[in-house]
Image (tube, rainbow, N blue to C red; front, side, top):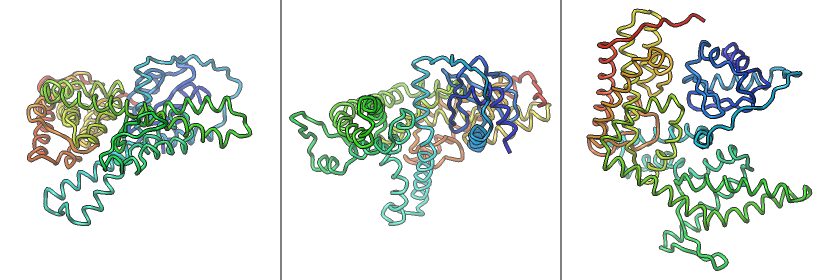
Length: 455
């Protein structure tokens, strides 16, 4: 189904031999090339099925939309099955990228594989909140308890998921990484904490006990450290005993350092970061929500939105809510409203068809079709979407709207905003304001028609 698209992407990326690595997120193929000068991004951008191309650090991000998983599967299959292009001498000269870009790419690589589980768990929590609000279930019923356990599973054992994905990014033995996570989450430590004991002695060194359930930053930093230790051990330990000694020594040295130093320090940093974000929204919530609603779509365009995922996960894990999603959801609705305005005002039938589809997609929380297929292409509607997002974010900030689960904020996922009395209606109001303001701006002030190119 996607064979022609995949073949052309590979062709314009410089061929199979020029592709160093590849992965995908919720809407984008993420490809690293050996030689960036061989990549024909303009031709990729004009392919049917491609909404845009973003260069971030040393990574090419090809925006596909909701069908990215199917496209990626075809892409990976094509690379594995197509004949290699021998005889070409490709010099590796792609840039290492900036420090910030590399960090964001690493964060995206760690969280992208587990976002579906987090979002699915968040949706179940949202549905349970709706069931409680409508009195279909009580929090004492056994059905509710079982469903709540199912929804809590991902968050309670989040370090295991992060250890798994981190081991892939940092190129460490996955089983050993999971073993370290298991030690950090061991019930013995939880029992001591429950009994009120906060420290233990390890060879005379005081170890501060920390509950790492639902934590984010500690396990990522621990696995990053352990990966370097494992690489060092693989270099110095004889091959004959590597298979046993390397895992044993990695566990033996990395885990105590994790429990004594890295874990407590990372937990402290994570707590301070989460507190800072909440303080910012508590004290300057109106301004913060306004700005976030206005510029979130720009963050999506640059691919920086993945940097917020750890903050969202950590905030919900620690406090049970975040203030960011109502503002980012308002931005999404601003894109939907602008696309709706384009649909109403445009005279080009192809543009109208794309705008209608993109509007529905954005209302469902997937904004790339609206951003790349309509609003950014026509320029002015993208500006109007930002104005609408700012208006919705402003209202969300005034009302101190919250989100209680992880997921793409949209009208489809409104149950994730059910919590405090009237909170979901605050969010609905913010979303509607964002949609209407951006749609009206698009209809009233207009834009320059740019008919879609024929492929």
